[in-house]
Image (cartoon, rainbow over all chains, first blue to last red; front, side, top):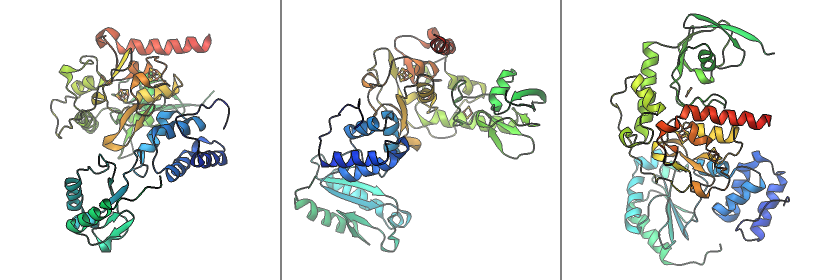
Length: 171
Length: 237
Ligand code: SF4
Ligand code: SF4
Ligand code: FES
């Protein structure tokens, strides 16, 4: 790490070592920001303020600029996602086939807003643009498993099954 | 010395420095083109589209603040079509957030209000959006009301290019865009801010302002020249 860069609230661990190595590999170049944000999200799962502050200090970029870039792209997550993640495809085909009903059903039954996480941190609900499986519309992804031609009831059942079985998160 | 080009603006022959934008040249020659996001002394954004002009020989309209002058160019700054476009631009800006002038600090000293009056905007042809952003009063001297912001980015450009700090930027995008300090921190806690006041001085509306002072007293324009003169003092001294 170059001199004069203060440590933030980040824990020194393997993830941080890997992140700093990646930044070094990019020679602390400011225009590598997007690349670095990708790597940081892969390592940490989401980008919190300590992490973004650290990146802004290492790349010597204004924090507001880093935050602006991180929030511009939907792909970057700024909040810790829940233990389980449900993503509903809202691409045109899925939308036409009733994706909105699936989203509303989940919102209602699990008391969660799209883009948000339940208060107990168990479930996050995201919507996304076309995942490229239009033939199976409407598509819902529950913890990485795609459910095609889904009805709201089927999806709810699946989520209940998944959320009910607590698994210890390796985070 | 850079090259000089000759062009006409509204039929008037003018000489200009190559590379300058039409709006700047027009102003230097006392020809009025309405503009909003443009701020002399910093880079142009070309965002608000209030400064549109016509150029003879092209069916398009051009944002004059980002269109460089060219030899022999014939610029038209006023026409029925231009007035129609400008009016729409102002209406859309007004509709984007709750601009209720009667309860705004900038009432009577607002560039948006001034242009709306000038262009005869007396009602909106689109639905208004009633945003409900929290008012930020955490800074000792300044206040920020995102509900008044028109996203002109003057504050961002002046903080970056004149103060050299870049404490401000835009987060998210499209209709969700918001002007932020550092990592969307409260202004009073934004470490990079030097509290210089340049941003509030150049904000054309009532989004960034000096606390406890009616804008009629601050007289924004004077403040801007004050800021700029301080800047030149700094560079000389
Ligand atoms: S007060 Fe000065 S340093 Fe602070 S945000 Fe405004 S322009 Fe930037
Ligand atoms: S706060 Fe003022 S100067 Fe900054 S973008 Fe909004 S309207 Fe423009
Ligand atoms: S002043 Fe030219 S686009 Fe805003």
